[in-house]
Image 1: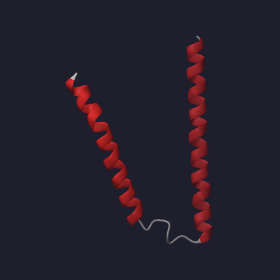
Image 2: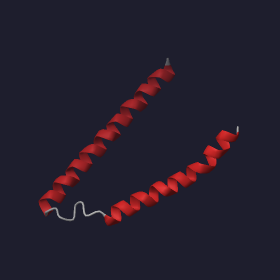
Image 3: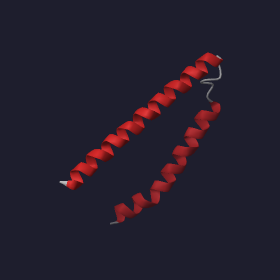
Image 4: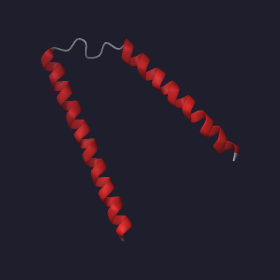
Length: 71
């Protein structure tokens, strides 16, 4: 019981530290600043493709869950 309470209390702290670290890394990173306009467009296209793939996998997963619930 105590372990669950401690985990529950630490989750917001872990989320905050993760957010701070990611923000720091993004603000100090030079990645992408040296890209040409063409490179930025290509990077954006890859990002869109990856997001479409993730959404598609989510839809497949939800369909499988619905099929399992109907059985």
